[in-house]
Amino acid sequence: MDIIVTIVVGFIVGVIAKFLMPGPDGGGFILTTILGIAGAFVGSFVAGALGMGGAVGWIGSVLGAMLILLVLRLVKKA
Image 1: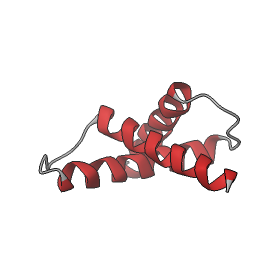
Image 2 (image 1 turned 45 degrees about the vertical axis):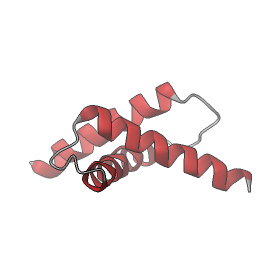
Image 3 (image 1 turned 180 degrees about the vertical axis):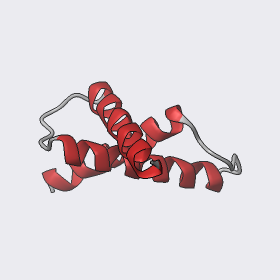
């Protein structure tokens, strides 16, 4: 059951990140879900590095996903 919750939450976070950073990003359900899940990990890592620790929550996950989306866009341009 935890895997299903992770996938659903990852998809929601990925959709929010793509909504807040509109652009010509391809990818469908799977890429958006991976973006959201990876964003949660990045958000947790950055919060830990800043000494905040613990779970980051929705805002940190979305910010992490937006950071990944920004890096992907920069890599695509290069």
